[in-house]
Image (cartoon, rainbow, N blue to C red; front, side):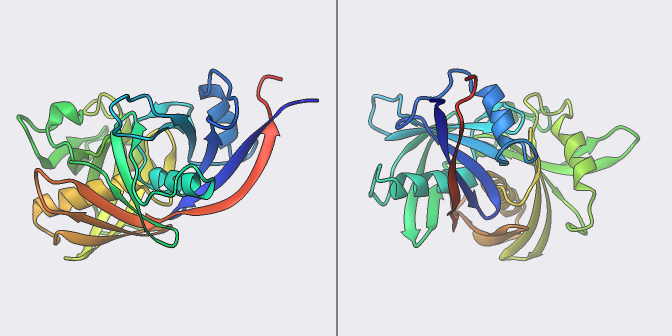
Length: 288
């Protein structure tokens, strides 16, 4: 009888994921090609990213589980803020933990999600990385921050960019009309710009008032998504550093609203938002 691979479809503010349980089920050794097939919206299940549950590697006790993250392109990436919320809900729903707060290893470091209500999770996203060489970006200098720096595109177009890392790199661009802005063109151009050696996630924003920002996201290796948690954190941090918003804001995305709070340099960024399970299923075990 042919083996199958169980999966769970989840989302956080419309940013959707397929979760694979690598503790309960054997997984293929090479997940990159599997991630591309599973994430395909026409020939697979469809998802912005694949989240893989693994045992924690650390022996220091700062994390109970590990979350590996694969983009639609099959590339393994550092961090996903919406994904960590969905991942924590999965752990609680499947009985792996009933703790209100845990540590989760990612390529971007240990992240600490906390259960704050029915299907709502607050995440300690850690301190933002402001130094250009650590983001990494060739924009700015010294220890940063990288704020309102000109970025030249082919054809003579110039954008004004702020950049920060939340465990993964982000470029934030304020525009007059978020909904009407050419995100696909600008996102693709900035993602692959030489100023970002590891490529970059791109957020187009409009500051509505001191407590609200509207955001659209172009995710590295994915394209436009309905939400990006680490991107909302980057948007909040850069806007707070620019002095245009307060220390606690709502970021309005096409898929929902995320709450972002940051007390300034030396402090962690906190993100709060929803997590939901959509459906479960099984697919034929890859390669058999």
